[in-house]
Image 1 (cartoon, helix red, strand yellow):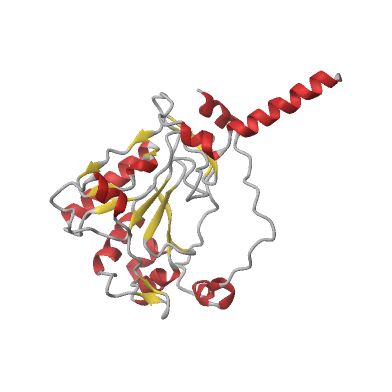
Image 2 (tube, helix red, strand yellow; image 1 turned 135 degrees about the horizontal axis):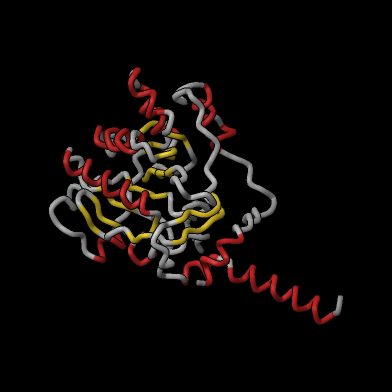
Length: 280
């Protein structure tokens, strides 16, 4: 093989890696024009073609942090958010404040997330805003408001100054949605839900999964939609409701002070199809 050909192969590989950098994905500010959305890869290494923009305001919800341009997702995700907004409005729970979905073509983001890459994840703040019930928030409010933590870290319990029954109702409504695969919350929130579970709540409690942080928002993840053959889902959840010893571990010193890796994790490579999505 000639030296020139070797150099060409090296440069081609280098350009491919550069094109897949988070900065280049963030520069793609419009979705591909595919009529049928396709989630490609997995939640932490993937992309989406034919993404749909969530309208910035709708019944029962408003989108926050518009400057991040992360309000795109699979059509199934957009429908889920709008339906949950209707639940919040119809049951007078307050207005849902929507954080990040994904970028216009998914892919890795320059900051904030390792997931949210296939258009099937959304962060929803625990701030169920009564102030936003009857008016649109200004652009400045959408950028400057922060979601308060609903957890008391000193007692490993929810903070009852912030936590209300409305939060449990909206989590239940989200978890009961058939397209929802799992919902990540702070372990103290999971414990609060387990403390007064009923026989009927076991079916949706299993979808509520404890995870680090997530004290000011909950992270909803949808399953791979039908007719999306290149979408890779997660392993099935355990059949139990998760209110057992597996939850107790999250309050151990091992869980609270996880060891840090000696070297930064290398992001997994994106599926080859994502190169086409990026460069269209």
